[in-house]
Figure 1: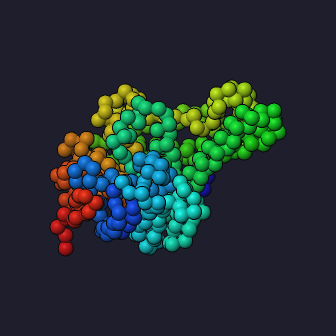
Figure 2: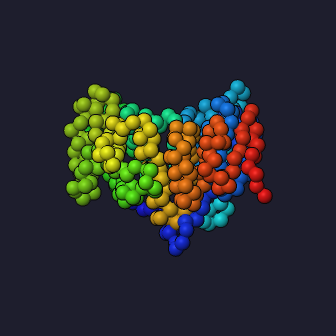
Figure 3: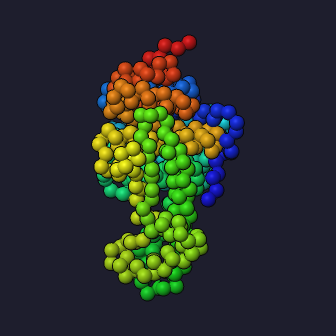
Length: 392
């Protein structure tokens, strides 16, 4: 798997700070037209519930591949209460390679489709976003990630993988499309063995590439998680429970492809009946363990599970900084509200030590007092933004 990022290999000294310098929203959620300039420091968004704080974080999350932190349909991103046909999000970034402009929005050619631009030039896929900006986030809806279905954990981990391998999202999309095609063949043309053989061979190649990228990210994360940022962040180990990942640990990649092809062929009768596929990386689960207590994450308290997630996000950011010499963008939605004062202070210090830019939301700016002058505080109300920071 190629670790292809625009930044290149890490250089000596501190990592380059990737930051959003300007963001523009057009007909997006609660915003008709917003142009916001910020400095490179952390950004705190305060305001009452429904003011539009999370909408702004969601806009930033859409500057990465995927459906954003709410996983919303594209048609749901249009400004609420208005019959606007299009929406758009654009940003100017400060990166190790200088200022870069990226943007995304609804397509003017096809309803429900999405367009991407990098430096004003249309990109053929969302990979163009991933090569310029990686975004990772925590939201309140992720608090039950360790006790809910495996799909949420898998999507969370795949976002981490994209941070190291931007092509991962494209492979995932292609894999899902091919699985859908296989399901249609099994339903309507199950006797076409030659077509199924060829398709399952291609699916197997793609599946092994997906699993190998996951395994590489797993290794990098566990290396960092063994030594968390600060004593208050629990030591964590993460594992992938899946057939393909298990085979990759024991057999060469080509042999795994052959094994997977055979598994697909044997599962055709069952898959035809159920309309899916009983084998493949879409069945993989993420297993997280609290090392200090030596228990699985699902048996930890709600507060402990929150800290486990924070540990993983911090480790991911640190691993990216060490490998590429540039920090990712971190989005934390209402995270501080669920931490006590000691852990809020520890998280503020950990985020500042990473050297990147974090965007955070909260009802009160008192929750972010530990940042001091290291953060800029913005108040949001009725679609308008006011700077509360006292800065020269």
